Length: 116
Image (cartoon, rainbow, N blue to C red; front, side, top):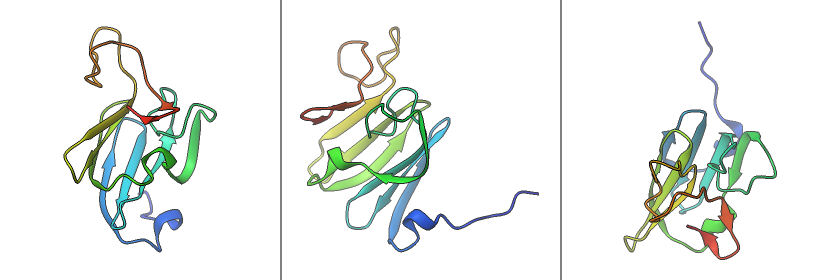
């Protein structure tokens, strides 16, 4: 039987939500910061595509300054809902599904102006 473990990278924060995708996870801290970890093959962690995966939670810098109210994950894509109601999405945007809702089917990672 697997052992339940505390996630040290976010254990000192007050985490108010956790969501899990196919092979990645996001956590929303009470202070509005969003952390991601796991597989990053489609940029679903929101930290760029320099790393194919990360084993410890990483703060998503592209969301700094955006007051996030809620996070959600799909198979290989992620979303954040801001307090103002703006929706931000990143990761896989399958060429037939367009799951990010961008009106096109190109995948998005971190963008120079932030997350889509």
